[in-house]
Amino acid sequence: MAAKVNRAFFTGDFCGCAMLMALGRFLVSIKKFCINLDQGDYSMSILTGGQARGLVESMIDAETQTQMCGMELTLQKIERFTSAGAVAFDNKERTLPEMLPIDFDESGWVQLSPGSYLVTFNEIVSIPRDVTALARARSTLQRCGASLETALWDPGYRGRSQSLLVVYNSHGLRLKKNARLMQLIFLRLEKDAEKVYTGKYQGENI
Image (tube, rainbow, N blue to C red; front, side, top):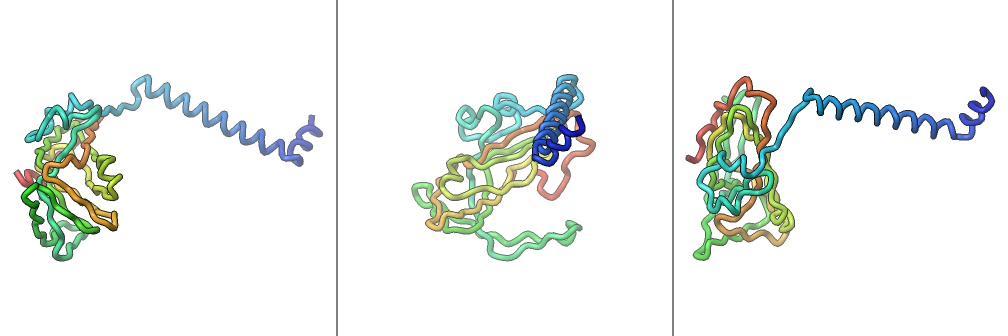
């Protein structure tokens, strides 16, 4: 038996056996994790579009903006940065940059050069105490060479949100007012949050 083990070790078969044993232990741990999920040790749920619809107001077309697992937000206005901002640990030292609105043309379109912009959405979002929200840019926006950078929508937040639009396409991007830019995904927490959002942006743009 010892001779067989030695031969396996020196021929490289031992390494293969070790990998199989490690894989087996990994699969066992996954099985235990799944059992714990089934037993309710962990819980996470994403609201369907129908469940989330009541958390979003002032929609252009609720039926169109209601997706399978979230709600779409649409473009109200675009602004360009005209000065620097400042961020520190203490918000008392925070300075937001100056902004300059960009006008839409007579047909409701705007031509954006490559760069970063601040966009404000039409919709008012209200986050309950037991919910948080994340956002993703619509795939069409990404296919046009642009994306959105977003923060977390905290429990208790209510407002007409803003996000950072970044145009990477060297040829720029054309956007029309009320364009659907982003899908907001709502996640239900295991329990009510210990505290709710009361920061500077509470009630913004309403």
